[in-house]
Image (cartoon, rainbow, N blue to C red; front, side, top):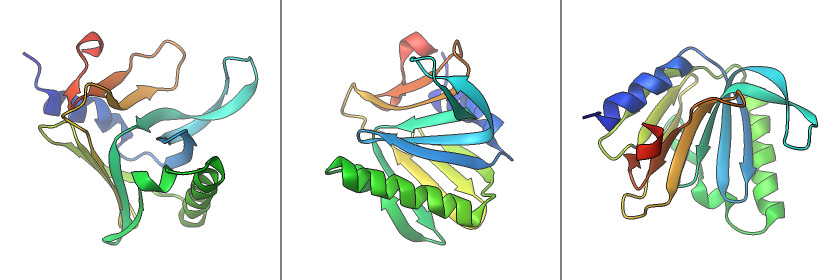
Length: 160
């Protein structure tokens, strides 16, 4: 039997020492990039810059700086203009404070995450264990890379 907590920590340890290099959104999903960027083509064949690793979050999350909450999943709620403005502010924060480096990753028994970053930044991801919807996913930004997917506070069986 696979221990989800250990599996998550094992898979995400590749982020340790890498720079938090991108932030974006898709509807109410927060998308974060880590590591060096490279050119890739989107599904329309248009080239774009993507980070080596991606973390897509569709559950409760909190980003704090020195213990002060600076954003939560509610930051993406509402009209697109508001959510786009938030994503822009977060990209500007990244640029002003670059580099922000991943210092450690820890997971809990509900497949939640704590990503400790340099400069006193911390990201906490709290899956909804009562739902069978996708909570978050982590993957290398290669077209055929295997994804680690968390649904309902557990590693999705098809991704083990």
